[in-house]
Image 1 (cartoon, rainbow, N blue to C red):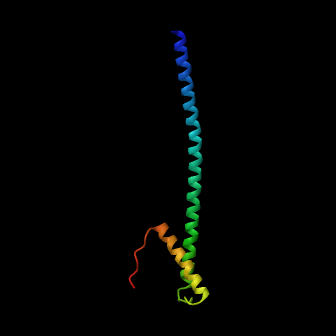
Image 2 (image 1 turned 90 degrees about the vertical axis):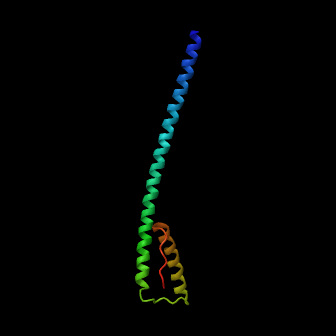
Amino acid sequence: MNSLLILCIVLLSGTVAYFIYRAYVLAGVFSDLEEYTKELEDMTQYMYTQINESFKSMKEIDRLGAFEKDDEAGTTFAMLKDVIDNLEEEFNGKKKEKVK
Protein backbone atom coordinates (compact mmCIF):
# COMPACT_ATOMS: atom_id res chain seq x y z
CA MET A 1 0.00 0.00 0.00
CA ASN A 2 2.83 2.41 0.86
CA SER A 3 4.59 1.68 -2.44
CA LEU A 4 1.37 2.46 -4.34
CA LEU A 5 1.02 5.76 -2.48
CA ILE A 6 4.65 6.66 -3.20
CA LEU A 7 4.18 5.78 -6.90
CA CYS A 8 1.07 7.99 -7.11
CA ILE A 9 2.89 10.89 -5.41
CA VAL A 10 5.86 10.53 -7.79
CA LEU A 11 3.58 10.42 -10.86
CA LEU A 12 1.53 13.37 -9.60
CA SER A 13 4.69 15.36 -8.86
CA GLY A 14 6.05 14.61 -12.32
CA THR A 15 2.78 15.65 -13.95
CA VAL A 16 2.65 18.89 -11.97
CA ALA A 17 6.31 19.64 -12.79
CA TYR A 18 5.60 19.05 -16.50
CA PHE A 19 2.60 21.41 -16.50
CA ILE A 20 4.57 24.08 -14.65
CA TYR A 21 7.36 23.77 -17.24
CA ARG A 22 4.85 24.03 -20.13
CA ALA A 23 3.25 27.09 -18.55
CA TYR A 24 6.69 28.71 -18.23
CA VAL A 25 7.54 27.95 -21.87
CA LEU A 26 4.18 29.22 -23.11
CA ALA A 27 4.54 32.40 -21.06
CA GLY A 28 7.86 33.06 -22.84
CA VAL A 29 6.29 32.41 -26.24
CA PHE A 30 3.39 34.71 -25.38
CA SER A 31 5.79 37.43 -24.26
CA ASP A 32 7.72 37.18 -27.53
CA LEU A 33 4.46 37.31 -29.46
CA GLU A 34 3.41 40.48 -27.63
CA GLU A 35 6.73 42.14 -28.50
CA TYR A 36 6.39 41.10 -32.15
CA THR A 37 2.82 42.39 -32.27
CA LYS A 38 3.91 45.75 -30.80
CA GLU A 39 6.73 46.05 -33.35
CA LEU A 40 4.30 45.18 -36.15
CA GLU A 41 1.81 47.81 -34.94
CA ASP A 42 4.58 50.42 -34.75
CA MET A 43 5.78 49.56 -38.26
CA THR A 44 2.22 49.66 -39.59
CA GLN A 45 1.64 53.08 -38.03
CA TYR A 46 4.94 54.36 -39.50
CA MET A 47 4.03 53.02 -42.94
CA TYR A 48 0.58 54.56 -42.74
CA THR A 49 2.06 57.92 -41.78
CA GLN A 50 4.51 57.78 -44.68
CA ILE A 51 1.77 56.73 -47.12
CA ASN A 52 -0.53 59.47 -45.89
CA GLU A 53 2.19 62.13 -46.25
CA SER A 54 3.03 60.85 -49.74
CA PHE A 55 -0.62 60.95 -50.67
CA LYS A 56 -0.93 64.55 -49.51
CA SER A 57 2.23 65.49 -51.43
CA MET A 58 0.91 63.83 -54.58
CA LYS A 59 -2.37 65.71 -54.28
CA GLU A 60 -0.44 68.97 -53.85
CA ILE A 61 1.76 68.24 -56.88
CA ASP A 62 -1.24 67.53 -59.08
CA ARG A 63 -3.55 70.22 -57.70
CA LEU A 64 -3.63 71.87 -61.11
CA GLY A 65 -3.94 68.60 -63.03
CA ALA A 66 -0.46 69.14 -64.48
CA PHE A 67 0.12 65.48 -65.26
CA GLU A 68 -1.43 64.25 -68.48
CA LYS A 69 -2.75 60.72 -68.47
CA ASP A 70 -1.41 60.15 -71.97
CA ASP A 71 2.31 60.45 -71.24
CA GLU A 72 4.59 58.14 -69.22
CA ALA A 73 4.81 60.44 -66.19
CA GLY A 74 1.04 60.76 -66.05
CA THR A 75 0.54 57.00 -66.31
CA THR A 76 3.07 56.38 -63.55
CA PHE A 77 1.48 59.09 -61.42
CA ALA A 78 -1.97 57.57 -61.95
CA MET A 79 -0.70 54.11 -61.00
CA LEU A 80 0.96 55.42 -57.84
CA LYS A 81 -2.18 57.33 -56.95
CA ASP A 82 -4.25 54.14 -57.38
CA VAL A 83 -1.91 52.24 -55.06
CA ILE A 84 -2.09 54.98 -52.44
CA ASP A 85 -5.89 55.13 -52.78
CA ASN A 86 -6.08 51.37 -52.21
CA LEU A 87 -3.83 51.64 -49.15
CA GLU A 88 -5.93 54.53 -47.83
CA GLU A 89 -9.01 52.32 -48.13
CA GLU A 90 -7.24 49.51 -46.27
CA PHE A 91 -6.21 51.77 -43.39
CA ASN A 92 -9.27 54.00 -43.20
CA GLY A 93 -12.01 51.70 -44.44
CA LYS A 94 -13.99 52.13 -47.61
CA LYS A 95 -14.63 55.70 -48.67
CA LYS A 96 -17.89 56.70 -50.28
CA GLU A 97 -17.51 57.43 -53.96
CA LYS A 98 -17.75 61.06 -54.87
CA VAL A 99 -20.56 62.03 -57.22
CA LYS A 100 -19.14 63.68 -60.33
